[in-house]
Length: 318
Image 1 (cartoon, helix red, strand yellow):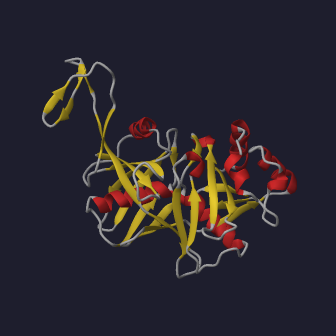
Image 2 (tube, one colour; image 1 turned 90 degrees about the vertical axis):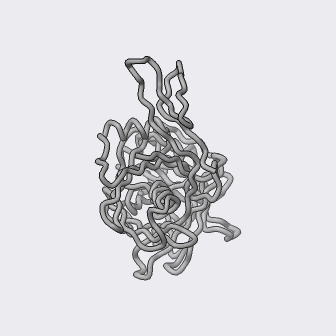
Image 3 (cartoon, one colour; image 1 turned 60 degrees about the vertical axis):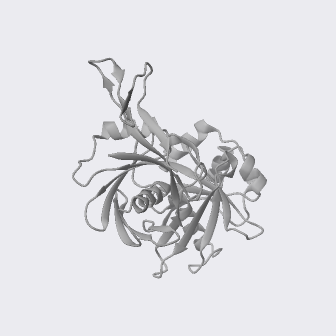
């Protein structure tokens, strides 16, 4: 296996959203669930994708957060196909990603990688008492809610609570009550919450923050599936049309500003999320040599002796 760290929804390293990408050889079996969980936990990124080619145009992908396996991850998928393109294992064209959320079409073109979202659906619309409960979990007064927009649970592969905020200053400054957000996530069976404010200057579609402490992610700086859900939410309110290319800015408060694109396919129903990813590191697992009592790290055919525990070696790919 080859292990990479990518910065998704960015054209620069150390920007965008980090994801682990593990490329398995065609004849290599998937590692055990325990090992995949351990790799994801060691990398400490919000998601790590394990990918294996199953056919000429098909790739099976499994996704792990630091704590559990999830059905789908947008930025990790963009990272997977960016790595495959960088390694010249794929070229421009259409591919299939086989995930626990279903088989999704991936379009690789000269500018971006576009991935299909699962069929969009609004799963729940909150009542007034529930809305107060939701905003209080983020220490936001309901007067800061966007008029005529109501929080809803939307799914395009993963379920998120989409929460409108009227003012960008409130979006940028809120502090969640972690215990309450986890309780909400369990109660409504969602991954987390995607809070947004529309760009009043209309230079982009919206600014967003994504919160998912239930799955070990206090905040994520770019989320493909959540912005796919937001696309469906905005289309349902006729704020955008199925002919628009939408631009979402996320991660500004984390110092890792990310740009996520979305659009509808020609069928007018299927949402695609688009962007690029760059490789920042390649990693390698090293195991303890019990017989000799040190870690073996082979760099330029030299053996390095270390007295401290190392699980991964990182180096920047220029």
